[in-house]
Length: 320
Image (cartoon, rainbow, N blue to C red; front, side, top):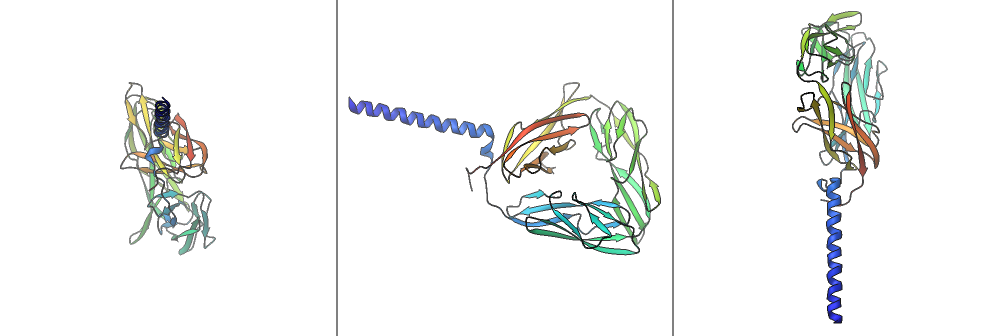
């Protein structure tokens, strides 16, 4: 009888242990943690893009600093890197915006960005050449009401053989021929409002010379964007790892569309989670866990947005 009781007790213990393991597995699966394997990595280098650019005096150029790790991953550290310039003719802001004063002839400046004990370096050339032309472009010429497309403005300086091009999007003045069809922001972002055609154009002035681009047609048609939704919701990401997010729009005819590349991604606290690169192959947005804590991720397009919590954790299981 005693032996039978021992067997019964052992059976109960084993059953409870199995139940605990199952519950733990389900909890981990629910958090999405099983998708991650924490690996050790070291900061290998910092690189700056564009690499060794040329810019006109009296203009500004956005630089980007990227931290490259030993496991082939990387992170955008533009706003956290320490920027320096070897010459006061070029200043670099904490956000990586290089501004060049008007120079005589040509000036060569060394720009550095430092992060985590590593330093990236580029040679920036400033030239005193006149703006000769301006052209604009966008990824698409058709958008739905409520969605956006981003125009860029490219200026050509000088004449052959001494000539170069530069992105002047942030310096340009943007116009739309019909603001009831689409608006255009100072950053070149066109937002569709109602069905119809409009023409987008831009002008830029550098060192007293103004150039205006040819107009580019933009057509707004189709169902109106009603809402957008981020996936995944309320997500957990291990510190120093990345997870991918998508944004799906729902339209007035109940259809849906992937808007991951069109929305503007932001985080409420970049010291906890940062917006990394967009993966054009897999069509998802990478979000990186920077430090343990809680914050939110937001996707915005036009006047529509969605926000979801994200939790950065330390995960020690499933190591490789």
